[in-house]
Image (cartoon, rainbow, N blue to C red; front, side, top):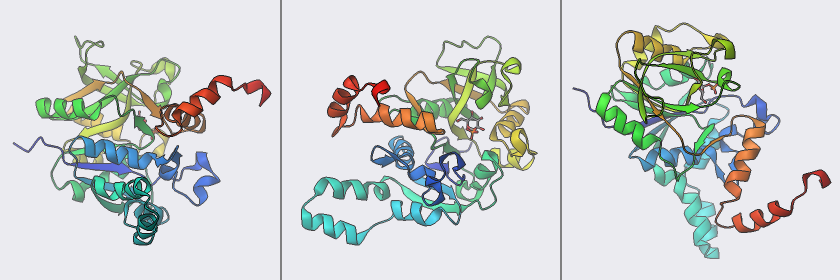
Length: 298
Ligand code: G1P
C-alpha cells in the first residue's frame, strides 16, 4: 500500500490577481502583506508545521523572480542587519527559506485550479500531495491541515476542508453532498458528490470546499480526464467528483475555526485588520486606536 505520510505540498500562485490591480502589475498578489508577512509565507509555514518538507510553488515567468527572491537568501541584507545587530529582522528574513525546500514550476497558460494542480505530477512522484490555496489563511491557533492528514492516514483517498458558508455565499465555492447518515455536526464526514460554484437555488448544501486539500496520486489521471467546467476552467472539484463516483473515498474535515479570506479586496482589508489586532508589535496600539476610530468622521 502506498505511504499515507504527506511530506509534499503544492501551492498555486500563478493567478493574475486582477482584483488587486494596479498593485499586482508589479508585485505578485501572494506577496501582499498581512501586516508584515505575505500570505504565501503563512501558508508555507502552515504546511511545514504539519511535517511538509517540500513545497512546489506553481508560478509563471513574470511572478517567479519576486517569489524566488522572497524564499531565497539575501546575503547583502543579512550582512547589513547583522552589522546593525537587528536580530529580529534578521530572523524574519531568513525564515521563509528555512521553512521547507521550495521548488517552482511554471503555469504560463493558466487554465484553472485543476490545471495548476496537474502541474505538480512530476513533483508528487506517486506520493500524496497537500494543496494549500494562499487566498485562504487559517488562524495559526486553529488546526485544519493536521486533522486532514489524520483523516488521510485513516481513510486514504481524497480529504477536503469544509466550511459552512450560508446560502448567500455558496455560489463562490465548491459545494458538497454528504453521504447518507453523515453527521454535519461531526468533525470528519464522508462526501459523495460535489459541484463547483452552484447557483444558490441549485446548491446541494451550504457546506463549501475551502482551500486545503489532501490528494492521492490518482488525482492526476482524473485531472487528465476532466474537461473544462465552470468558467471554462479545469476544475479540481470536477476531478475529485470523478474520483468519488469511481469509488475513491472522499472525506471532508469540517472547519469551525478562524479563516481569513484574502481573495477579494474587502476580505483582504478585513484580514489585515483581524491580524493587526493580534500583532505582537502593533496589536495593542491598533486596538486602542480602533476603539476610538469613527468611520463617519474619516
Ligand atoms: C477554488 C475552488 C473552489 C473552492 C475555493 C475555495 O475556487 O475551485 O471549489 O471552494 O477555491 O477558496 P476559486 O476561489 O479559486 O475561484
